[in-house]
Amino acid sequence: MAETITMYTVFLSLLFVLIIIFLVVAALAEKKYKNVVITEKIKCRGYYQSISLLWIFVFVVMVMCIIGGISLENIGLRSMSFNYNIWFTIVILTLSGLAVIFFSYQTILLLTSAKAKEDAKKQISMNEGVGQSLPQTKKEKWLFSILSLSAGICEEIIFRGFLVFLLQAIFPDISILLIILMTSVTFGIFHLYQGFKGVIKTGIFGAFLMCLVLVTDSLIIAMLLHFLLDFSSTFLLSEG
Image 1 (cartoon, rainbow, N blue to C red):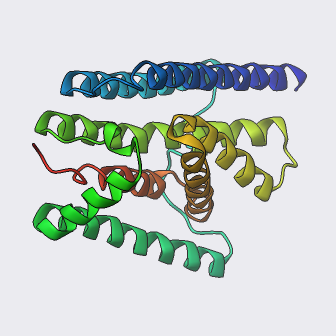
Image 2 (cartoon, rainbow, N blue to C red):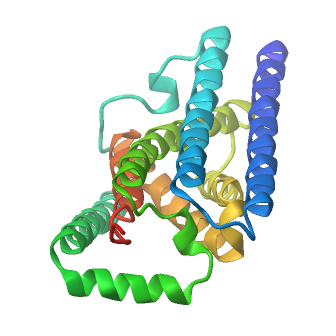
């Protein structure tokens, strides 16, 4: 048992180091391009790097699973089941359904309404720096869509899958509330490059996704919702 716990601790430490490396790389990239005009080439390079880094993280997680004899079901890649508190499940699933409708509606509206695009442009212009990371050209939007899908899959495996499994393996008596808190804080810190407000927002969203994983006993719906949130930002800026 002691050997197993030591192995899990090593795995968790490696994951933590990877997150720190990501934050350093993101911070350096932010500083490098702070006073630079962001061209399509620079933006696409950033998307390529983010996509690659996410899948490298997942590759490392899968290697850890193979070494540690951890199955895909152990990290949340399994079919859904609903065995949690019925009222809590209803609330979370209802909110998730409303979120799916909202993100889908926002995407369709941005694709069909000139007024919606203009309103989005005004909101972005009021938030300095946000527009620099959003896609505008066809190539950028295509890559950003792939990035959105990669984030939806990879970040759920890392934070709501593998990290949760490790926490429960190392601390068998850990409470659900503490798991929600630790995973959401870690998820928020992972998005430190978005600034303090970005950390808070992603942390709250991460807590909700963790609740969704708890009531469905699977990462599937969380992956879908995560993807839709990111993908809904693809069309905030018009081409040109």
